[in-house]
Length: 581
Image (cartoon, rainbow, N blue to C red; front, side, top):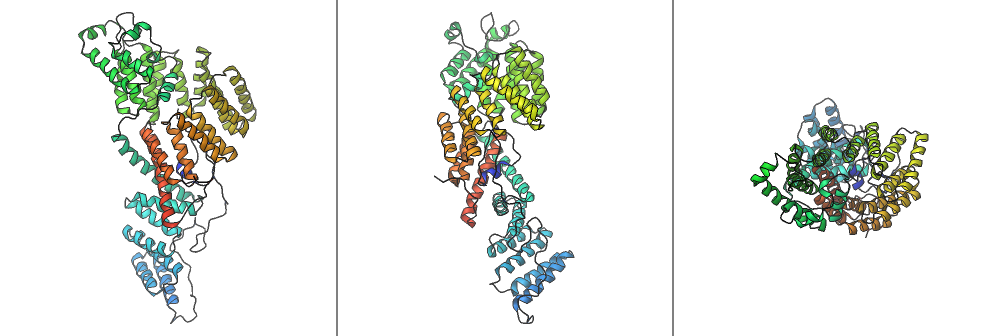
């Protein structure tokens, strides 16, 4: 499962540095809250949520001599334009607003901005978006913080396909409204997601393979308890250097990851071109634990597909996994592992039905396989099928009582179910069960980490921090635990310096930890270090394991860039948290 959990707040809002501690990865997002009173539009004193059209109340002007005062004459034309607008006579309204603009003295900047904005509103009704942009731009020249004009120009820019400019305007609107206007928030969120998706589609399609760190790869394979391709090699197997698969395994073991795929390919090419292999495939099980002369074809496909998967190359991984799944004569453990990995790929791509089908088929092939039950349980959690998840986790525990991670997931699922139902008694029982679990599984970092998240939910931050420290002590090379602890520092103590220190430690341990770079980017935005933020987001983008993950990261980067541009253009900033460095 991903390190990052769901939040009710869009992640781009976090990236806009609303000046509060954030916590990602199970701790949740904690955002800066300001007054709930209606935000006032500086142009006319009305709440922003109103946005009435056309703008400006009827007025007799500032002079009592209406025949000679230009402003009074301009106001009269504006009022006539408003009347025409309300009758749906938009062309006539535009003419009246134009007359008002020509008559109005240049020192009446507030009124001129309103006249141009009203003219833009009429052009919008006629579908003339170029004119809308032009008139709104003139309004903003007179009043740079004119929210209504920025909002209208943003809509027109989106229609014209100028999404970066659209986002800048809408970002300015959200900041000026202190993130309290739902319409603006939804608009900005949609544009960011669209931009992130478009950018990710292009980058993901054209990028080369990115090999994750040795630490990450080792942790990935260690997460499977019944995976044949990661089991220890025998002395006899180690001596078989003629086999590409064995050489690939040795390369994996030594951390020479770049050699694994070529060696597996050598095994596959030799096996598929050999007449002996063709005969053997009809007579023996194609697995590395066969009693006959070893045929590693299915294992080589699985190992190569796994590395492709870790590189984020789904298009290359899927055919290899398909091959193993379709090999009826392959060892069932290999086929089930391939189904788990293909199912996980479907989960990444948000194809829950296909993931469910793969996991269900894997359980049918090997009902006692705890790896598939554990992964299917995680899918059920994502689908909010907690009761089904608990059944799978419980079955894991029955089959393999020492499967600590299954125990941890079971405890956390029970806790989340009770907590979401606001069942205080069951929540306390779940927390007590966690206390028992950490005593029973002192060497399982996930037990401490999940308990820390539950404690954080309960507001017991000191105890949560203690649990994260225990998790780090058990698994000091697990970079994500440092990130989680750093985020807790923000949430509990608003200690951004300690948080930065911990996340930097995570990056020191694993420079390819995308979660750490994403989190550091978000923190740097909060500190006002927008250039550093975009650098970290870009690193995380290059490390993304899926197109969907990449789209999310692009949205964060684009949001940071939009804010940086606003600082240059208008001097608009959000409150920063902690000193910039």
